[in-house]
Amino acid sequence: MASSFISFYRHFKLLICLTILIFDYCASVPIHHHLQPKYHHHRNRRHSPENERNSIRIPSSLCQGESFPLGMESGDIGDEQLTASSSYNLQSVGPQNARLNREISGGAWCPNKQLSAAHSGSEWIQVDLQDFYVITAIATQGRFGNGLGVEFAEEFWIEYSRDNGTTWNKWTDMNGDYKLPGNEDTYTPQKNILEHPLVAIRWIRLVPFASYQRTTCLRFELYGCRHDHTLPISYSIPDGYKGSALGDLRDLTYDGRTDFYGYLNGGLGQLTDGIRGDDNYKVNFGYEWIGWKSEGSDLSMVFEFNQIANFTSATFYCHNLFTKEIQVFTGAKVWFSYDGNIWSKRPLEFEYMPDLILEHSRDVVVHLHHKAAMFIKFDLQFGNKWILISEVTFNAEPIDENVR
Image (cartoon, rainbow, N blue to C red; front, side):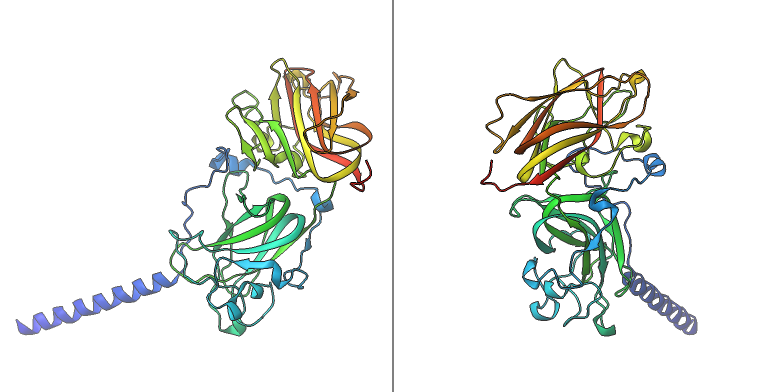
């Protein structure tokens, strides 16, 4: 009887030890939670498995279709431009050490505390770009630390600001997802090309995410180009239409304010991301197109720029599927202002000859006759039930603010 009990006890003890070993191993393996709650930025997205299967990635034309490292690795972004929420040790793993492919001091930026799914979002590293930029991609690494480092971020998200850092927005993709894949080791760079670029931003934050409690460290590089003076820093429009047979035609990446009546103000979105909608407006479920329904009045748009410029033209990329009651606007009145309050006494007027032969999207060029302004307002006249616009671009030259 005693020998049977001893044998049972030995087997039971062995089972307990094996359980502990398995638990310890599992706790050391990164777990990727794909069922995290989605971050919905301003509006619900067209998020469904079917949407993701049928989506087509259309590249942005901003930065002339090319992007360049902005200076984390090279040092063109100075140490004084880098700050962080905290650092485990400022000298060895402070934000100045977060340079891609560089082994400086401790080898990366590491926040003061460990992160978990419940506590992610409290730590960040920030870059003051000191001017307006377009960001098209981000590459990250962990802390190699000359072979001694074991820390990296499995995922991260992006926050950005156009003002003095008072207002922060979170980048999301066309499905409303905000987390980007990070690293799987401490040395291999992971480059994420953004589905739609960040436009006219000055401050950017990388916010590491951990699905289980761990130390996260980051090195990174930003890719993009300097913001062109012909690109707006904000536009204000009535939001697009949702609920028709045409689908959801709202400006789903708009990052400004939305009032009770659905008027968008103080931000940027799909009209300035450099991504032209497909001729088949149903591709990506109409994502690249914003659509407005005629309700008896003109469609008004106001664009703000970061300096006074001499404007030659504005180009609207419009659809003309007239058999579906979608048509290019037939005319426009254009107003100019230096401050957004006092406008030109008389508008510049534009007419467009309706095309009832070719049903394809096209550029519509509105000549602005070298008008000087920092704000431009367009009142577009409906030619049919719907106006669909994907992109608005400008041709301009900067001028001295003292010469008006």
